[in-house]
Length: 196
Ligand SMILES: Cc1cc2nc3c(=O)[nH]c(=O)nc-3n(C[C@H](O)[C@H](O)[C@H](O)COP(=O)(O)OP(=O)(O)OC[C@H]3O[C@@H](n4cnc5c(N)ncnc54)[C@H](O)[C@@H]3O)c2cc1C
Image (cartoon, rainbow, N blue to C red):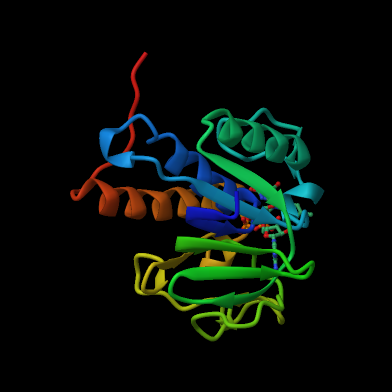
């Protein structure tokens, strides 16, 4: 699959949380045949983390194990795919992500969730700004409209959206971005709740 409805770049806490929340709506009639592609080059901060304070996750869990679980959870919905890829360039309308190995992926919606470290993607829809004016040097974020939109059909999530570096915060912004997209598809405010 090289074409999707949603193209997520970055498969850490935020990108995977966004993908899972989007995919969990797949049984809704308005979801249609939408598909999600998540591109990731395997450098999530979670790789290095030992989590003692992530809500609902056992104390002492490796971030690496949480990443694996989230990947499996997303893929279990069967409405998307995770592709190992390093994105180097973006083009708009529709969104096209070009990779260092010449592969290209397209999507109607773009979600950028590449973390807050300096990154080298050309053609970003907005210029990066410091993550926090008084924060660690070299950390970046992208300015958004308050609902994480950075351009038509484009959102930012996680640390790149200005969130502080905690798993719950990054994942929470990813889920919120997904809800904004789901509301657009449903044509009303909505969220996905299931009951036993
Ligand atoms: C050592 C360490 C310990 C930590 N401990 C804790 C803790 O105890 N509790 C806690 O709550 N949080 C902890 N954190 C913080 C937590 O890991 C982060 O807040 C969280 O991972 C941020 O999520 P994110 O999705 O914004 O970024 P990330 O998880 O870093 O994900 C960004 C993803 O984007 C991908 N990417 C970037 N550029 C590209 C590109 N051009 N093409 C394709 N993919 C790309 C990267 O490979 C990466 O997978 C820790 C972090 C570190 C570094």
